[in-house]
Amino acid sequence: MGSSRRHLLIAGAAWLILSAAAVALIAGIQVLPEIASREAEIENRAFVLLTVLAAPVLMFVVVGLVYSAWRFRAPPGDDRDGPAIHGDTAVQAVWVGISAILVLGLFVYGAVGLLEIRGATDADYLIQARAEQWEWHFVYPGGVESDELHVPVGQRVEIDITSDDVLHSLWVPAFGVKQDAVPGRVTRIFVSVDQAGVYRGQCAELCGLGHTVMLFDTTAQTEAELDAWLADQPAASAEPS
Image (cartoon, rainbow, N blue to C red; front, side, top):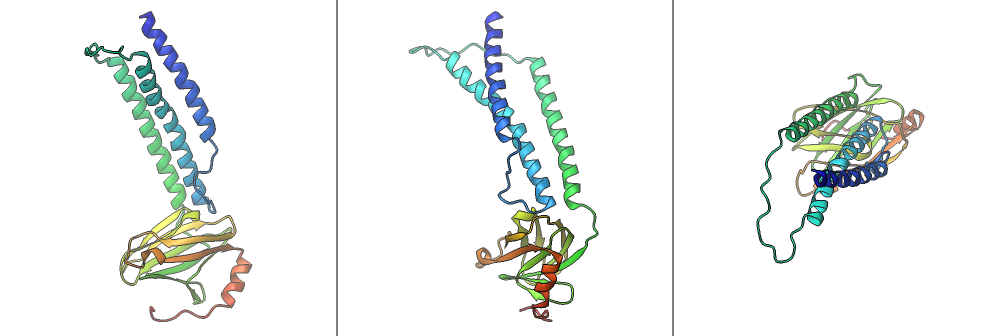
C-alpha cells in the first residue's frame, strides 16, 4: 500500500505541475486570428475555456502513460503477462461524476453563449445579401448595391441572406458569424462590430468550380464614412446578374 501511494503522489504531483503550467500558458490567449465583433469575442472566450479544461485531461493521460511505461516497465527478457487489474467501483464513480459535471457545465455555458451570440432580433442597420455562382451582392438602405460588404461600427447589423441558384454560405471570420444562403429562403444573421478595419469575407459552402474565388471585402467603418461611401455608389440592379 505504501508503494502504491508513493507512485500516486509522484504521478499526481507531476500532473498538477504540468497542468498548472499548461493552463498558465493558455489562459488569456487569443485563439481566433482576428476579433472584430462582440460575437467573435464570445466565441474566443469559449475556445479558451475549452482548451483550458482540456489541458488537465491531456496531462492526466500523458503523465499516466509516461510514468507507467517508465516505472513499471518489464526487465529485458521478461515475457510474462502482467498481474490482473480489477475494477474499482469508487474510482469509476468519481470518474463518471466528474465527467458528468464537466459535460453539464459546458452545456450550460455553451447555451448561454449561443443566446448571447444570437441576441435580440432587432437591429440598427439592415443589409440584404444575395449569392450566386460565384459572386456576392449586397444591397443597402436606399437601394445601393455593391459586391463589397460595408458595416457601421458600434451598431447592431442585420444581414438578410438568400441565393439565386445553389447553397452558399456567408462567412466573415473576424466577425465570428456564418450563415447559409438558401435558394428561395431568407436567412438572417446579426452582428455587432466594434473594431474598424478591412476584413476578408468568403463563401463557406462548396458551391461549384468557382467556390474558392467567391470572396468579398468587408469594411467596418463609422456611420459617417459609410454614408459617404454609399453616396458614391450606383443604385441597385432590378434583376440578378
